[in-house]
Image (cartoon, rainbow, N blue to C red; front, side, top):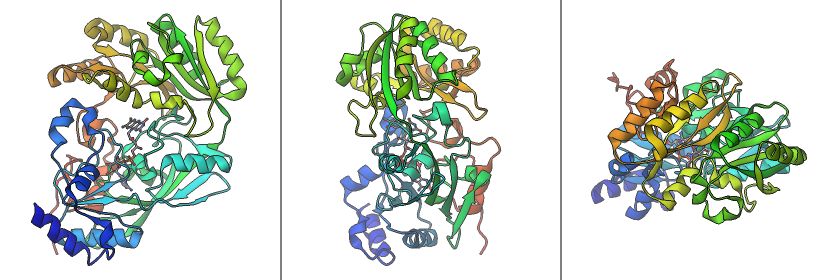
Length: 456
Ligand SMILES: Cc1cc2nc3c(=O)[nH]c(=O)nc-3n(C[C@H](O)[C@H](O)[C@H](O)COP(=O)(O)OP(=O)(O)OC[C@H]3O[C@@H](n4cnc5c(N)ncnc54)[C@H](O)[C@@H]3O)c2cc1C
């Protein structure tokens, strides 16, 4: 192994002349080869020992082109990494090779007059949110890992988050305007994808191209307030939050429901939690706060917190408890917890909740995140907290969810196709065949791809 590191690093120094940006220390390689894959008890055992042979930190597109040319000539795999906050081992190199760490390519080039951020992929979403708000814009949607996660990694591996209740996910409503992509062809090149062509590369886990320059649509900034209310029953909290989420009169960024005991896991914000009660958590336009308070009380809720949102450094930042951060708090409280990623039917969800409760009891705890789908319908998305016993039991729960019409993006697999966001029209696969015919980009993560024989 030492020889592989050493030889690759020495050869790479011919194309990346700054040796300080070629990394081989085992602890550094181990860190740069992993993400939050350990969220899944299934992936935890499968991916722990996977590691790149060398990591390289390019500072511009010419260096990326040079690294891909170098890797192509030697048939060495390349796995691109943003900030490594992905949940399914998306950036864990399954076949070693080069980890392409884009953390140093983090420039915000411009925020255009019509609200589009033009940036490099390593730019952190939290930095972009802060800068955008200075110009009276803000992110349309972001993951709860806002402070750490990069724009490139979000487009490569994320789907949506805070803001999705208004603006949908990354793949909806022209939220991603375009990007430049470096290909892994025999002669790597930069190609522009815009409009519908973004979907060929979006959420393909860096398997079919490297995003190097991004046009990301923003929204006009809103003065937000944070709000929580506790309800005696899950049903009452769900009904109230749903009415705000779907109600066009409400300007909201988050509409979340946590059934008990999930709120008991949120130790730093115990003061907003009421024992044995379901918690509704919302971000709402500040001018609507009093109306929301009245609506919550009328629905039988007890308002437990209100406070301003002043950007990613707000304390407490309630979004730190939402989306997939909820699972983190649950796992901290009890490592036996894991999660699923679901979409309930707006019309059938109450029946679906009841069926799941009947079959699994409190093995599944409801955590709802309302979001808009691509048809403009606000649906109860969910990241339920699940008590893990065996992989078979987990698979049984996934199969049962699907059998009763609950969509599941399986977070316990390490390839795109079962993750639930793979395009049925196969355009990501077709792009891989075109841009990476030798299968060198993040190999093993798009299992429907098979290497083509390259004739020279
Ligand atoms: C606590 C927690 C909460 C989370 N909440 C959410 C959430 O609310 N919503 C959500 O969508 N996700 C969520 N995630 C997952 C993840 O944080 C986000 O998707 C995040 O945006 C990933 O960004 P990153 O920079 O860390 O990407 P990485 O983990 O570094 O990369 C993600 C994937 O994209 C690929 N990639 C990285 N850069 C590029 C590039 N330039 N070109 C092409 N491909 C690239 C990588 O190879 C990898 O496959 C959460 C994760 C955790 C641990």
